[in-house]
Length: 367
Length: 257
Image 1: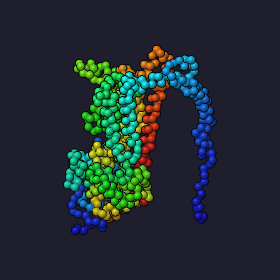
Image 2: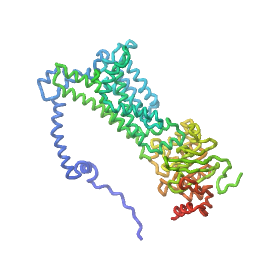
Image 3: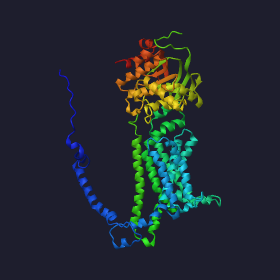
């Protein structure tokens, strides 16, 4: 009988690692894939250079009139965007008061920075402040009427500012509401359960456009005469309730994915319902459904454009209005490209952030 | 001091768990039929029987993970009723170890252990952390305290689960097939921990098929089948001299090889 001698670790074959290995596995792994790779490269070659030429190289960037664009065609006329930029950002907000919006934005950024610093000790309190304290400050900054600030009616809020206000209020309200609805729908108490089911199914069953339209046109008819109920506030409530129904279903899918043993272990240790939900079940369930939550948030962000139909001027509405300006006819490609770009930046950031969050919260294999 | 029937810590005469005429149904299915059981303080009981015999259901009734529909269950002088206060009271006194460990994967080993003492017992965090380390040392894995359950082997996870239960300082421990989900080479480390626990005088009810464990530490072995307690006896009598045919059949099946 011979004794076993262990074999040394050999390096992998050169064709399976590095650039060559990557090319082989990802682009040229078979004849079919090689053909597809070449075809895709050809399509990129056909489309990308002209696009870059139009959008960047031959484009007109600065100025205050459309003349250069009309003289030298073939490139994008970003002058249209730069001339109207302030309106796209601030809507009809009085120009002299732009600093209030800027201040609110800077304040938010400054408040948020420590939340991303690992060692910062008062994260929880700061988080609470950003969620509950900051909106009050921002509201008074925007709307004024206090401390000598000029009052600006909500109907003059607009542009990207309005988009962000609607989206962040919608997210901040629909997330907790969605969690409560999801827990309610899984409750063993029949009344709680049926209220949640009816709520969710109602709001999921109607189009957002109907909700907005009803809230701005129908609702005032039912309210006693003279009651003034801000249009923006109504839109916010409409969007929040609508999205919370979607959020509830996303969260519920996460709750259902948590093994029964987790609930039982929490119960067996004597944790109360709310303790086991907030300490054990929700942290796991919400982590599981981060992709779904972000999906809903992105949808919400883009759905805010629908407030156009009730006469609120978000960024897209401002761009539409600018396109109708007789002095600047014919620049819809530029205007809409700009809108698409801005929306894409925000949505893509959310998506990247969610992926980073998923990685950060990953704690080894499940169970 | 009374004489104990088997070697090991002394069993007192004081009752800690009483089941009187307990019945339970899952829909139409009658899972527990007239269960009567008295457990004295410090007793180590092993419950065995074929799958579906109701053994897990019985011990899960003791901390109300399952609800019984008829009869009385009294734990440490408190009767289990719909009263949430009584349920919480009993759950604080009764620790449970599950087949699939059920550790909380989003918390570290130490956080798993501290959670209930902090939130249920209202223990200061520092104190709870120290206690957790003490129990992790007892189950011989203090060095894993900062890891997440997903990074541990099955045997280590189960030992953490035992430590987590002990952190609540329970007077009774329930084990629901604690070694059934483990790879063979990890069963021993968990059983060793349980034997140590038994020697410390803990009241234990274990659903298990580890007959070696039953012989070493149990004062009593209970055999269940079809939702009934068929037979209960001291381990030596139970294995050497089973009374009913069903027990004989069961023992011949599990001891065949």
